[in-house]
Image (cartoon, rainbow, N blue to C red; front, side, top):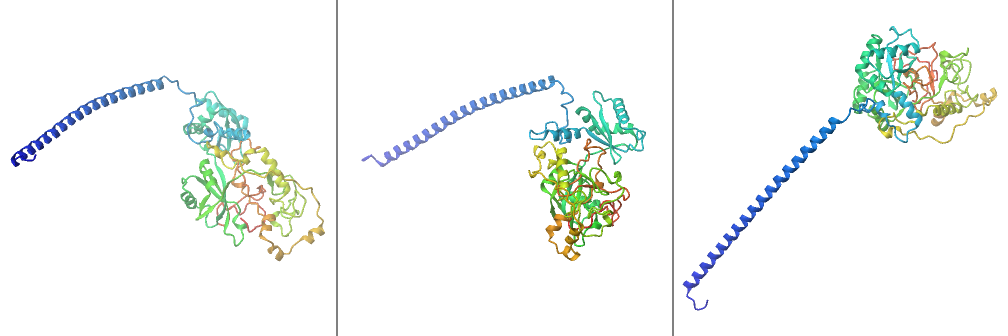
Length: 482
């Protein structure tokens, strides 16, 4: 714009600025209108989509409700409680479960223990008469399509009834039906829950099994319900402990299989000490009178007692000699109660074959891992032929008390292991484990079940409680181990 006056240049520039503003305003207006149009269209489409989805959802809900209404009611066999009870756990055992074990657990699921019939009108009836009376009473209470298959009386005074079908077992598992049945049977009749017996090793002796507060403390320290542990008892009498003993094995009864399995898996915290836990298992019964097998001392037909320490003709509690001799093996290198006894190991192996549930490490539940088995050696135990030991050889092999005290600790554990008697804690049915109610009578670390002679009934221990069981007839000498 050379040669153009300054006033004209300013006027042209002013017009140019005004045109720019007009153009910006026009562009903004155009964009606003386009955006408003697009948002309006989008909002309309979204409303249509939501309404269509709502209609489809309502239609689907109506269809599902109609299908549920039209469905037939499930049969009684399928209407089971979805809890980890014995019955629900055995509906579908895992594929790796032993068929014999699964069958036995199925029998246990249909069994019920009733106490308090001794003083009732049914106390004079035998097993067959009791069975007929139970079936008649169940029929009066409205149970149809099933009955009681068998009735067994136990040594503890209880009565075990077995249902013939799962439907009857479900009916009997109802607390309301149990109350109605007990009213018919007698004023003292009551159903007992199944207990699961475990053993905790190397528990500090500071606790008192008789004290309820101590049991509550164990439950609280391990996150258990206050009623989970029903009772506790030392595996060995207190008066048989050594003076320097600070730990011992403790027997516990749990009322819940899941809690017992959790204790076996994780151990128990007792007196700030983590204790290993195992399930107790059955072993052959050894008589404390004749040191024989498969009978109780009160049923023993032998006239004279035999010592479990030296095989002499006297009671084990009155033994004063130091040498060891086995009645079963007729050898002089171990006692009759030793776990290294070949006769005992052979009988345990045969007993485990007849009782496959001994192979279970846990109590079977709905969880497949609870059916796992204990790993055992594949080498079968052998029984040495009885070899008579001359008296001269025994005398030469005798050790003085000083020499006995200087023996290595591992030798003491191997040959002088104390076998505790805790059979009095467990009520064993009076039959070949057909009932299987109290199936646990030992631990894999402990010895055979020992039954005291009837002439020496168990009594309270030094602290005055039955749990100590200091007067029970386990006649083995006190040993330093737990």
